Length: 163
Length: 433
Image 1 (cartoon, each protein chain N blue to C red):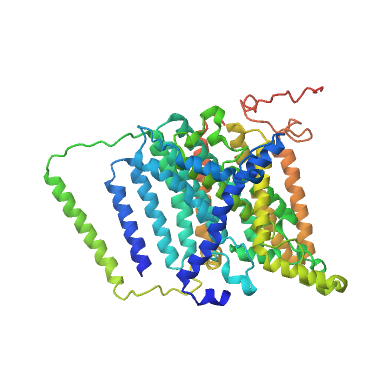
Image 2: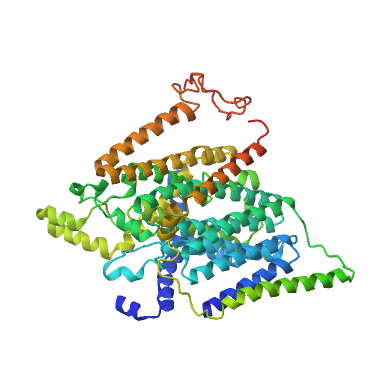
């Protein structure tokens, strides 16, 4: 529980950093850190495979790409601008809080009886996941792989003018 | 000792295991630097550092003291936060990557000391953490606000991402042959009889002795060198092109931290190679207990060797890591640096297809072993390997004379001929010495 508290506090701070930092690279870094901490929360819940997938996919691949794009675009230093007070700002905050309240009402109700992870020991293990992927979910799995293949071929077609 | 360890709370146990693993690595890193400088100079017919202490052994300490007392210069135009964080980010994967490595036996009285965490995703963890190595390099390159540094950082990230792929696929075949992602299971699998023959139970089935394992080992070895940014893949810090790449602007201890991270990573990657392909902590590919049972004449010696194999396991593992390091240094002394396009074409056009073909061959082997027994499996594997080889010669390779490309049966697309790599020597002409 203590571990969870510490990790979630760090994750929330990192998430705040994403929004509050004015430099895009620092925001992206905070996002990396947030994803990384989330992976550790998964480790704490004994779903190592999920955690490591989080690191491989998000921290190791997608965020590297994000950083790449930000660096190559060279978005430069922080820019500040003044905003006039508008009724739209107030309205935006109002809608934001309303959305947060709707989500919270759905999510927090489930936390009422939540005590500790109750999943069986083999839950989320590579063996269990592999078995399910190749038996029960074999069609979605294969279709997703074909989708990825199409993505790869498409990106090559876009990138290469002359094949 | 082990009873005492088990009685501690899990957090204390983990801390002790971390200390027992990380402290030796920290102690060994200066030794590695000395070994690299000495061995490299011997290979280049020089003497090398031999003044400080016996055989120059204290040279790294002198260097460390020097680096520590140097002026720590921070250029004016750097992004200060990221500039200071980057060396720490670079050091993190170097020490975190070894957490699932078993450097000692996984059974018997020594079992609870190693690895730090025997999780069921062992090898995936290593791949994931090594992919985090990109950040230190990219961030330092970006934060330095220097064009050469940025170039070095970008080169490093492209290189790491490309070679990670071939590395994962080459390891996937081994994972399939083991049936588990756990590194302790991999070591246990390699202690089984050679090639699955019970007659050869004296010898251990190290993966490097199997055909698919050998191919995977070669691919992994190349990718491992590229992952650690070492010669001949040290483009990110190519000094004649981009000064020193991503750590040009770093001085004093911050530079030393980059250096230390690089050497620690090399060392631990040597350990990963030893664990996955060289039988882990085992001294020699021999099952001593089986030898004692089968050949009574050498039974006393075999029993002594069995004890040595078990109780001195960390020593054998260290020896294999040192062998890995020596291989790195040998490569650095032998091979010139690759050009950037060569690096990319090696990674994407050679290593990745080879790794994928190897992966398919392993799958065929496993299926045929299940259907027809070990012999059928091996025959199927060699047939599959032969088919892959013939396909490679005829379809893929443009250099083979008997291949379809040379016979004009398949052609490169328009313009591709002009873009063929520039050779220093015209391959069509005979070279006279």
